[in-house]
Length: 68
Image (spheres, rainbow, N blue to C red):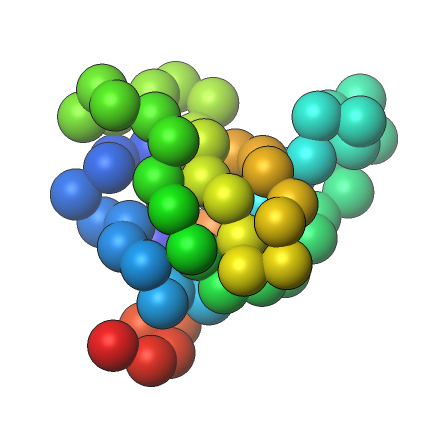
């Protein structure tokens, strides 16, 4: 599932994000969603989130619905 729709993303999901500094290379970082930062229902580059470790980036892939 891709990360372009806000309705698909919630706190506790395991996701792959691309950090701002990694946008050129497309390197992905895996983590658990803490906060959703994008307010609009969709975004073409992915919904921006903050992970539990404090990293911020755009969701490229939803891995699993880990804890709820």
